[in-house]
Length: 259
Image (cartoon, rainbow, N blue to C red; front, side, top):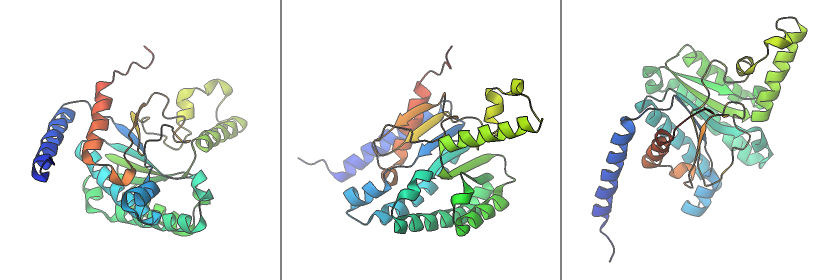
């Protein structure tokens, strides 16, 4: 016999409230990084729709998750929005994604909640690979929010973890040649000052949706000691309870950093 929907909804709500209280009583990650994966598969397998619909829903999901993080006082969020490898996709899809990213940057920059919570919106990645409209949107977002220090949303667009490290090596080598630093000055802390997230703590938690269990060239230097969490939920279908479970799992782990 099928359980009435009203009963299942109440049970779900009760369970979510229980996890919410448990999570609220625990230590929060300061920085969470998210690999937002599964937009196309969600559209095709769940909705039976065009893949572009999945990307549109994925954009809306990012807005939701940002607010969930702010509600829990998670101050730094870094999301993998578009990798350098994603440029190899079909031209129409890349164009559509660039338009969505452009609109997202403008929307975040003008969001009253973003300003109320003092969220800095920044783009990390190779800006030279981006079309002018996206570059302008990134500059607009930084101009509107760049002075905020309470919270930060990093959008990794045209981003590659290996390229991030390579750029850091180039920057250090250039400064050595110019006599600004010496070889003996180079240590882990210095390298961290040359990667794209300079000035921010490394992510405490790296979360990936869609069931894939890999990091896909994302924040390779920064995630050396991050807790990793993988869920088989596609990004557009990522629910508040899925988010709470990820945070609870982080809280239940004991971070020793090699000690």
